[in-house]
Image 1 (cartoon, rainbow, N blue to C red):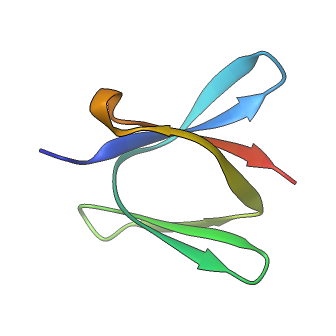
Image 2: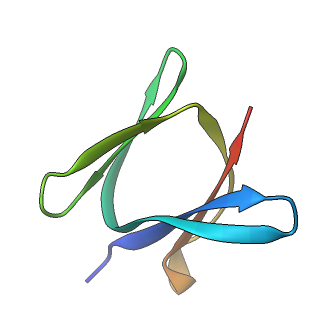
Image 3: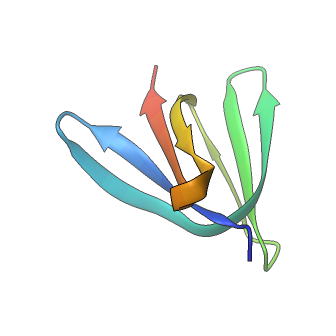
Length: 62
């Protein structure tokens, strides 16, 4: 499987936002994430870091 987990950076902590993220689409005011089951969320954030080998996407609110 090639999906990654998305985390939201909150200070020094990282909070799991969504598991098994398949798609990230940039939107005018943030990002739309969709998992392998079709669940979608929108968040006003930017991508801070992606480590696909470790299946991690770190997002940061703006």
